[in-house]
Amino acid sequence: MTPVTAALQIDHVSHSFGATEALKDVSLTVPRGGFTALLGVNGAGKTTLFSLITRLYNNRSGTIRVGGHDLRREPALALARLGVVFQSRAMDADLTVHQNLIYHASLHGIPGRIARPRITQVLEQVDLADRADARITALSGGQSRRAEIARALIHRPDLLLLDEATVGLDVKSRAEVLALTRRLIAKDGVSALWATHIMDEIAPDDDLVILHRGEVLRHGPAARIAGQKGLTHAFLELTGVAP
Image 1 (tube, rainbow, N blue to C red):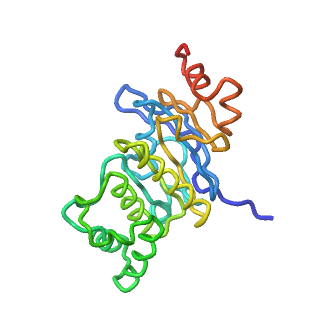
Image 2 (cartoon, one colour):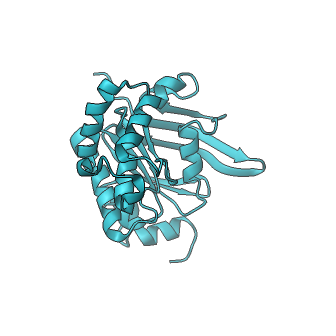
Image 3 (spheres, helix red, strand yellow):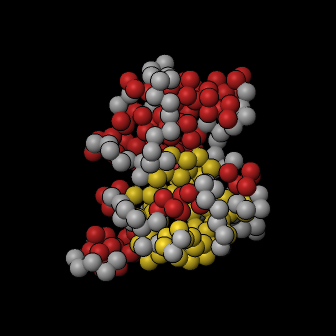
């Protein structure tokens, strides 16, 4: 039987900014159809890792494969399989949701006759079908983030990268965005790497990577890492901070 290719495979990746080593020999796997949480405080290296996966930075060490495609050798094929929700907003606030999605579809080379029904589909997926003609400025924080997810889905990627996707949202909106991501995995078969510093967003059966000061300290089922004392205690113990 042919082994299933991982949605994302990172092997021995390091990255420095001058004398500052931001990532140190990082390896992790996101399985197909899986949700992997990347947990770390600000400055842990989460955004640097996302910048390497999306080729905002070049990885000079190790390998990054998206859907089996080596990012350095086959960048177009690898990046075509990615949908990204950055921490900073990527939608044009002066345009409507539909106009934004038409624009991003064109960036992926999707012609209008294909883009229009696809936009209808992705807006239904993120529960924004009734807000297609609303300007981004008229959306709530949670709706805006769901519109960003729709943008990331427009070219039908296999893997979603979400970098602190719930930053700035209230508790209800955070829960809705997280639930939406989990639903996309369950119903549509996408995979997700969810970067966060909020432990409440991690479920016991999630695949969990703990990243601290550029190093992977643990990778495995969240419940196993948490142990009997809970994830907060385990995280503080691993990172060297007294609980």
